[in-house]
Image 1 (cartoon, helix red, strand yellow):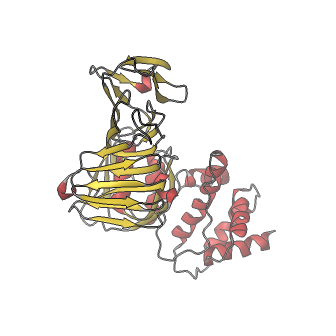
Image 2 (cartoon, rainbow, N blue to C red):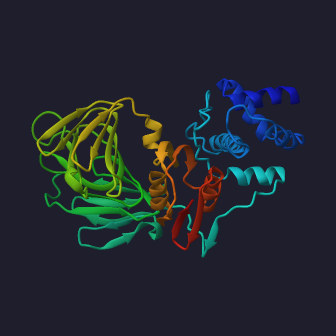
Image 3 (cartoon, helix red, strand yellow):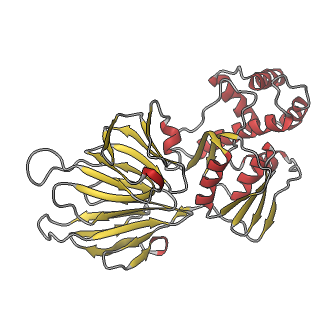
Length: 401
């Protein structure tokens, strides 16, 4: 068994394991064999032929353990992807909880860190939002009881046991008055919503959606800020044949990019349009959509992503990885060659913190997945394995070289 494990270890270092072999290797790492911790320590001290240091290799091992553990604790979707080939210079953002799991299960002592914490450590985000009714009344949903919350023009508003806002449209023709509601998530919040037509919406942190409480007329129209994922339901037109179009207006964009509008009939897509991001991204997962910006029109197909830059330029990218786009909805951060500031912006929104960079901080690329329910100190401590350091002061993260 030990010889087999050493061979798997060598294959992991060299990046030659098949998916099946990688699975066996990670299962062995998770095992309780008393010799495994000592064996790994010995193997880590041997010369490495990939140009990677001991710390980075150990980080990769921890990443695999956490990936396997996360998959077992998240039965909804299989998240483990075992790498077949590793680039020696790649910098890996690790899955949170890795080092802690290893230390607890193998009685290891953590290496001295450089992170300084002043005050209480910010907690990860959760299901938090504010529903603003047509009369201006605000309902704080994380503290609201389940059941009917309000009656708006043409619809009843409910909070489900699953923590979702549902609109149940009353009998057609009851009223033609149009009332608008707004669902807003704070930094550190997320929420789910079912519109009166059955369309499902997921809101990421620091986002909002404004919508009518019942749909009349020739089209359905909503306005968003931040990031949202849509699964649009088809709705028959009230007059004439066909379906009623569904339009999403993206507000709050700055620069020459300006606002944009998306028209769909029935489809799945994600919009990431934070004002602090240099590019607004609309990704189509299913169906087709039309994007409008000024006089320009773009027709998108599944697997494509439209990128609107601050200077107003559109770019269409093909073969987008859907797991990367939907990771936030499925409870993960996902980074693929993401630069440091992009990573920190996502961390800032989810943990509700500000970011400060000290002089001398260099950029680096990150790749990998991190569970969004990980504690902030776990995430930062593991990132420090990659020779980047942090100071946490109340609600601020200071990045230092």
